[in-house]
Image: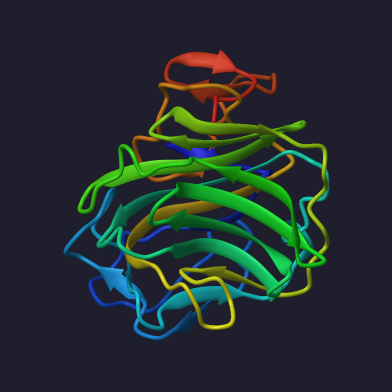
Length: 246
């Protein structure tokens, strides 16, 4: 399905062979480094044949600092599919970590649920948190999206926002690695599976509750053969973009 477009700055599919430790950024070909035993696993998957397995004890994927992680005051979207093995510990999902007081993190808190935080000068400048763990369970796939739309920050689960926060602060230009599966510094590892990990810069792919939850692997948008305009195929309709997918 469409979803890999000019706004897409990182896109990690799985859909490969069981046990593979090769990870490819299908958006911009950034180098992805594998830590621990992180691998593609056939036991569970949302789309295709595999998903990405993290054992919660030293597993992560990481990428070098890049201008694409510098969101500043602009719109952005982080989305992926997740399946938890445990809800008993706080687990970092995606993070850019420069230092303990200089980072942004999307994480699951074992008491207060899904959370997005931006820290600088050892203080939170953006803090958006569910406040409980209602609706989460192990061994269940969920689509999660963090979206900044102007000054509105929302975290969605399966198309419904769990928290909305109003904040004008900009995300600082951190210089640390981007981590998937831990905070940085070797703490708060994630235990479970991820699939279709995407970071989009310059676009709020969803701005309110949505029913068009991704139903397949993100691919390039298709131009309509013979169509001279800038429209894309969204189902059978010509549109400027498919909501959430381009």
